[in-house]
Structure formats: structure tokens, C-alpha cells
Amino acid sequence: MAEKAAHHTKTIINRPSIFEVIAQENLSSTIYPALKKFFNYITHKNPGQLECLNKNFDEVFLALNTVCQYQYLKKYGGTFSENFYDLTRVSSLTNYKPDNYQFYLSLALVVCVPYLRNKCDMYIDRLQMKYKLQLKHKVFITINKMVHTCWEALRLIYYIKYINGSSQSHSPLLTMAGVVLTYKNIESSNNESLSQLSIKESIKNNLLYGLSHSLELGAFFIQFLNWWHSENLQSKFIAYPIPNPPKENDIYKSVRNTNKCPICENERKMPTALTVSGFVYCYKCLHKHLVGVYSRCPVTKLPASMQDMIRIYTDI
Image (tube, one colour):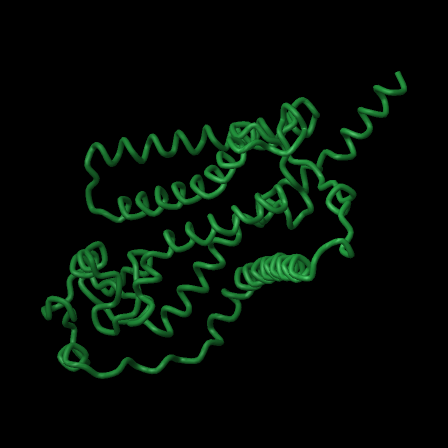
């Protein structure tokens, strides 16, 4: 009885709380939008040079995220966000380090699932901006909503089961990979003293230690910026200085002080403003321009998307 009680106590101690596992998930989901805002900012400062980088941001982030998560899973046994909260992954069957199959399956799920979800959301956003949707597009949107609802319901079930102790894992993705989260075993990681390491290995360990902790500090800073941006954007928007007008070019001169659309150069129909530049176009002209190969303002060449379109109602 005493041995069973001791084993049960050890399992409870090594089992992270629901608040820790949800916190590391929130940290992981915050990095992508925060970096995207940063890339959008530097692209607006250098629209010509970094436009390709901003257009392929998802692929660039996928490559960087794959390298980062591979290093963290290889060295620390957990992802970047899990290591931030001092958590690691172990096999759900053996309670030891995951084998190669579980390692690479964990890596694939960590980096590919968010990438595919973001791509799917962007595709649906483009579809919903169209005038009329084809039947296959309507079916795709409906199926996506059903899948999203089922996935969120499944996550909620896993959370409830994890809280009441009937499940070792809080996430379906961890179950698919055959791993669970636990606290790091600090004693086993420090078995080899620093005095027994060579100078080269000591320098390597110190560099990796500094890099990992600088990334963790950067993640905290990204979370702080995301919170600051969401809390203060609306209150400080009216305090922003009035931007300078764009540089004059042939298109700007031809439509200045007129009711003409800069694209078709005819009188504007269904006036629609582009928030990144302030220019007003025909709705159809601007929509056709942005869904094509051009993802920028026709006049100022600043990066833009369909979410930057605002309909202007002048006849009210």
C-alpha cells in the first residue's frame, strides 16, 4: 500500500497542471501573429525590397519554426513553448524518451498542423470576399466549419478528462504522437559535471544555453508587445500624426482632386478606400487588382490585401 501511494504521489507531482499546458499552447500560438505584424511593419518601411518576403511569410515561418522546434525537441525533449515552462515529452507507454518515430511525428504535427490551419483560414477569407461563391466553395466552407467545431469540442473533452485525471494527455496531437508532457528531470540532466567537459564542449553548451534563454526572453517580449498592441491600439489611434501624402507620379497626378478611379481612370463606382494608402477606387477594380498577382496599392505600391478594403457610402 505504501509503495502504491508513493508511486501515485510521484505521478501527481510530475504531472503539469492544466494552467501550465494551456499557457504553453497560448505562447506557441502568439508567436506567429506577433512575427507577422513585425514583418508587415518592416515591409511597409521597405515595400519594394521585402515584398517577396512578406508574400511568402508562411513558408519562411514554416522553415524557421521547423529548425527551431527540431533543435528544442532534440536537445530538451520538448518544443520551444514547452521548454519555456520547463516541460518535456516522454513516451506514454514507457515514460522514457520518445523513440525516433515519435520524435519525427511530434515534429511534423507541431510545425505542419498550424501551417495548414493558417493556409486554410487565408483561403477561406479570400473566398468570402467574392461576390458569388460556387457550390464547391460553399461546401468547402461548410466542411471547414464542421471540422473546426468538432476539433474544438474534442480539445474541450481532452481538457476535461485531463483535469479529472482520466487522461494522461491534454491534447489530441500528443495522443497521436504517443507522448505526454511532464516536468524535466533536472537531476538526470546535470549528472555530468561541467568540470568533466572539454573547453570546446563547455563553449558549445554555454552558447546553446544563451541562445535558448534569449529566445525565451524574446518570446516573453513578443507576448508583451501583443498585449500592449491590443490594449492601446484603439485608444491611441486618434493620436497618430497625419501621414504625409504619397510621392507624386503619373497616376497620382491624373486622379488628384477628381472622382476618378486610379485603376480604370473613370468615375468611381462603389467607392472603396484602401487603408494602407488612403486612395479610393472602384470596388470591382480594387478587388480584381488585389486577388490577382498584385498584393499592393496600385498608386503607392504599399503591400495590401482585401482586408484593407473599406467601402465608402457617399450617398447617405
